[in-house]
Image (cartoon, rainbow, N blue to C red):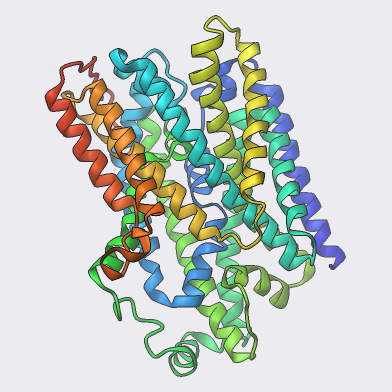
Amino acid sequence: MELGVWVSLILYFALMLAIGFYAWRKSTDTAEGYVLGGRNLHPAVAALSAGASDMSGWLLLGLPGALYASGLIEAWIGIGLFVGAFINWIVVAPRLREQTKRYDNSLTIPEFLSNRFPTAATTLRVVSAVIIVLFFAVYTASGLVGGGKLFASAFDGSYMTGVILTLGVVLIYTVFGGFLAVSLTDFVQGCIMMFALIIMPIVILTTGQGNGVEQAAERLATEVDPNYLSMTHGLTLLTFLSTVAWGLGYFGQPHIIVRFMAVRSVKEVPVARNIAMLWMAISLIGAIGVGIFGRTYMERNGLTLEDPETIFIVLSELLFHPLVTGFLFAALLAAIMSTVSSQLLVSSSSLTEDFYKVFFRRQASDHELVNVGRICVALVGVAAILIASDPSSNVLGLVSNAWAGFGAAFGPLMILSLTWKRMTGAGAVAGLVVGAGTVAFWIMSGLNKSFMGQGLYEIIPGFVASFIAILVVSLLTKDRGEFRPLETPAE
């Protein structure tokens, strides 16, 4: 491996650790500081932190790989995600920011739900925390798989060495710096990711390697598949629903919506939203370009690729100076680490606030809670390593399962708890259990691949079933709790 690559990577790791040290000195003395950064995030930091923790290695590995293998039809996933994210910022963000503060300064999603529905408080905290920890163990593992693939492919190294090294750096700045460290590193990592996704497609098309857009399209049509660039050929209703339904997941992703809770004020949510959506549009278009034009480059040069999800890694090595290659590898690590750190922290927060504090030490001091949270970060990380130990794991597959689990369990619950005053605690519990249970059943029964001969993404039945369960059970019960509608205008 070229020296320049290592120089770029070492500088990147040093920067992440420096940010973690800064955050450790600034805001980890209290539970609110460690878990939510004191609810004082700048809109730009909140926006890119939400985006970077959302996209993960999926943006640079999974999505380009899917487009590389199957063509432009896979772009529907990105479209569904963009629409879902925009609605999430409109409906959930301002309400969650205001209501979590007004409901006894709730620091976690389970705590907010228990305060919103006090008659089912303990049940909600336990069930939601269990779902968060279990699905995040899988989700975190998907990021570690990406780190392992990077080291195995780019450095000819050990897959497990890559997994452990990726987690090790993340643990250091997450354990010590908490939410502020995670958010600030996410901001920097989001910038790196976006620039990398702008640079790579442009370089492919302007250096003669890809022969321009028209020539690329012609080559793909003649040498790969005449329908490679079609977004509708072979698109059935079930396939369309399964791809765009990814957008439903946004409403229930704890590591994303927790950023809404930390913005400085409700009035700054629209600013954060605009920044987030611009970043997301640029990054998704760039990822699509990497997959499509990367296929052109490989076909033109007679190269083959065993694992389509490594196309970003391969192009980074083939097309750029070692220093730039190192920067691009850093971008991939940024995508992975930004999500892993967010997931570890949210899991730790739930274990600390919703298990330890509720069942073991109700009067625990802030200092004690912060230290317990740090231990929990490490424990969840170890669990994720065990799941990620199989090098044949598919990044997109692991992400899709966890994304569906969260989206179905928490999505309808968050929307209705923030907007519908008739909702009850029993309805909230029903939504959590039915949503998560339906997703698990759909995956284990193979219906996500075999439903009506084509398969249907598990988030759809899970989301619908959860929504219906909440509505029906709430209408049959009366423990509504106190509903506090949005008072501060979001615009």
